[in-house]
Length: 340
Image (cartoon, rainbow, N blue to C red; front, side, top):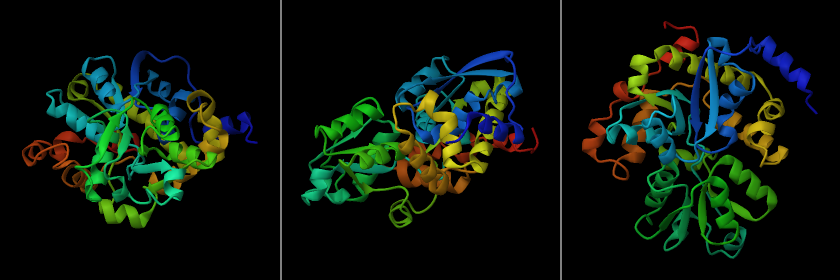
């Protein structure tokens, strides 16, 4: 068992000692509880934002659409959900900018089906979902986009039904009770359902062969985005937030899955077993997390031109979403010792 004292020693050695209360308080919304967001959980759990005079309250904003609404309404300084949500918010007239990337592949680009359906041979590949129902969080969310994209690539986009159920736990419950034939799933959802023995993945983001054949390379899945107005008026707060997140990522880069789980599970992922959390973290650490938190022009173009185009946006929309306008990696660069 990893002792709590040892965790604090690791954080201290990495320069992550806790600070006293910070001067500015902000709220930061994260869509759904998942180990994918561990950089933010570590930063919150050990007051890494306070080192930069910022007190951050983490909120579970549940879904991409709700995160966008809260950010647009000024209830949040920043939001985390699918990177496509930031672009959709800008297209809706509220300019937002991606300032931090969590992953290099879309960690929720997984399709789970019930083991009964798989074992019977009824559903063994994505194309078998023709005429069936797939669960997502909400229409137009990042999980919705993944369902549309994967169905489209399999040639069944026009025949599947996509059902918004609100959150990850409800989606998993609907699949377990066979109310839906499949669900878009995070790594945590896959690990938990497979460990319980009642579900099987038919598409996995962790499979290099499946991923490259379908997506063609790295694609940013989840990011942190803020209003463009916040960059103009509250740049120091945005920088402090990113500084804390980068410090959290640095801890992930040098720690074992067991050490990370000991920090994040109790407060943020208690609905999952310890074994499931450790397994998810190991998968993220090996295959999906971005170690440098940068969203590159090439990966961004795969998202816009490869995934969203023709499904969530038109070519005319895409022309209004250039990387230089929609992504600002200067905050990550500064946090890692570059120019402020």
